[in-house]
Image (cartoon, rainbow, N blue to C red; front, side):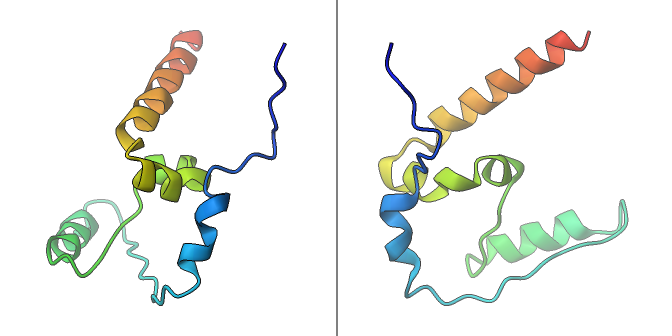
Length: 91
């Protein structure tokens, strides 16, 4: 049976690409229904800002790998499928 390296980090080969990236993070936080969604959508629409969604927070170790290899949607679907299986177990 093949072994799996639990220390395998998909983004590792690409981390050097981040060495020259200069950014200042912006955190948008607010009470429920206070307009934070409209604010972040407006900022993202300018194309001067990027954002992390829930998928990227869950799969933080493969953001670069998915972007470079074009596998973002495939990996996102795997996460959604695993999430639905887990929620079925709770019923």
